[in-house]
Each structure stands twice: as C-alpha cells, then as structure tokens.
Amino acid sequence: MNDKVFYILEFLEATYALFTLVLCLLWQKIHSPCVRGTKPLPRISVIIPVRNEASHIGTLLKDLNHQSYDPNLFEVWVVDDESSDKTAYIVETFAKNSLIRLQLITAPASTLPSSPKKRAIQAAISRATGDLIVTTDGDCRVGPDWLATLAYSYQSGQAKLLSGPVTFTSERTLADHLQTVEFSSLIGSGAAAIAAGTPTLCNGANLAYEKKAFEEVGGFAGNEHLASGDDEFLMHKIAARFPGGACL
Image (cartoon, rainbow, N blue to C red; front, side):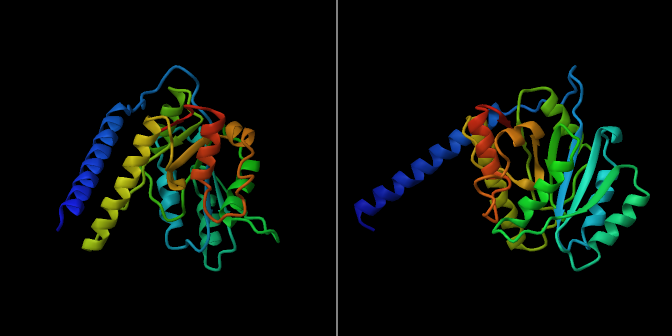
C-alpha cells in the first residue's frame, strides 16, 4: 500500500469516527417527554394499510386491543388494498368483539399512477376523527404503552410530527442479527438528525402527525405517484412548513 492510499484510508476512518461522535452527542440531546402533562390528551386515529396480511393482522389487532391508552380516545382504521386472502374477514370478525373502535374500509381504486399505500392512508385520513394520525403496518407488533407514549410526547411539546423507532424482533440467523444492527444504525442516525433540526429519516411503521398539519402541507400531493415516501417525503414537507416541528 502506498502512502497516498494509506492517508486516504486514515482520513476516511477519522471522518467516520468524527461523524459517529457527532451522532452520539446529538443522541444525548434527545429526551423522552413521556410523562403526562396538563394539556388534554389527543384523540388518535390509528391507520393500518394492508394487503394480504391474514397471518399477521390478528396479532396486531390484539396488541391494539390491550393498549393502556383510554379506548375512548382512539380509533383504528384498517384499509384493505385488494387482499386476496382472509385479511378482511379476520378484521371484520375481530371488530365484532373488540374493545376498541375498529373500522375496515376498502382502499379506493385509481386509474392514475399513484402509490396504493398513500391512497389507503389518504382514504382513512379523510374519515378519521382524531387530532393525531398514527400509522403502522399490518405485520408489526406494538407494546401496550405504544399509543400512550406517543400521546404524552405530543402533549408535552409542540411537535407536528413524531418519529418512533422500529426494529426486528425474531432474529434466527447471523444475517438476521446483522440486519437488525444495520437497521438500528439507520434509526439512530435518523433520530440524531431530528435532534440536530435537520430530519432526514423516519419509518411509516411507527409514525404520528397532526391531521391539521397533514392537511396544511397538502398531504402526499407532489409525490403521490411515487411508491414510497408516505413517511419521509411527508416528514420533509412538514419540517419545511413547521421548522422544528419534528421530534422523536
């Protein structure tokens, strides 16, 4: 190895170390305002766009049925996007004996080039009665304090959008563990960027935002034709309209 290559590698290592240090310092700035404040708690609309999630959706609905958050303060909208399995049947059956307000709707069809997931979320938001929109995916699991944590975080600050962490829960192979580590690094760097006031990454599997803010920035207008971006593109629009309005 010649000296030039050696110095380049040393420079890259130093830059990476400095970048990691900055992320760590920004991470330390993140606080967890999860203690109930004095303002009224928000009404929440949970939106779950699904397609062929028969093997997972029942488990997620059970998690939502056991939330510590007041069931009178949240509703759940499952938006079925042309599932060919028993997803809709499972949701309808669960709703008959559920402790929560659960509604199944069908994602609207469109002849225009647009993201099915965004159409599904938009359809539910148009019906939602909550002040705070919370999105997740049909194959996710959530803890009993999930909604309470989001509600208290929203209640205690001025955030228009809340980005929550996402991880994998069943690693069986070395590749699974490596994937979890890699994913965690993305979540961590995204959180640090939010702490720095320059939000870059978030995940729609654990995301909350004001319904009014969504409407004020025009929702998904401008990127509705793109398959992805129901999370990050929206976050960028809200951050631009409400500087400092994103938090983790």
